[in-house]
Image 1 (cartoon, rainbow, N blue to C red):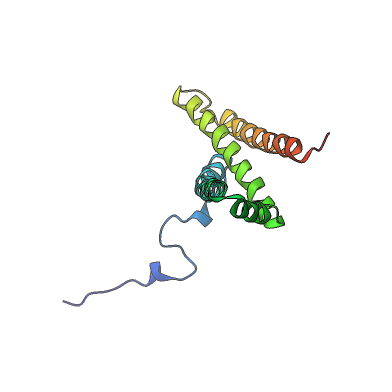
Image 2 (image 1 turned 90 degrees about the vertical axis):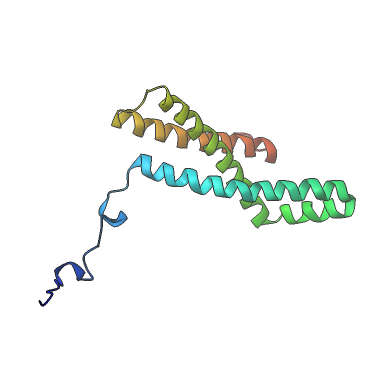
Length: 137
């Protein structure tokens, strides 16, 4: 008995299964991905915080080196991104707690809550860094 194989499903231009490129990005899916990215990013922030504590406990020379590294442009970008990640994770966690109560599941409500999470996270980050850098609005 000969076995026939079909080459119809092996065309390279056709995805083998439902692929991410098929779906239109939605606010909830993008925020879910951002939540995961910021969660991973917060581990970098935690490592930097541990470095700061160890440097402070080691002595003034080690702490001065940490402050020198943290004061670079890259250090400032990492700290600002880390604070955004912290605020976003906090606000998105609150949104998930609201979802746990059974609210905001309608599409418009979920999308608007996502925009609110982004705006509040950006606002808290900007407010914190304005206070730290002494910028008045």
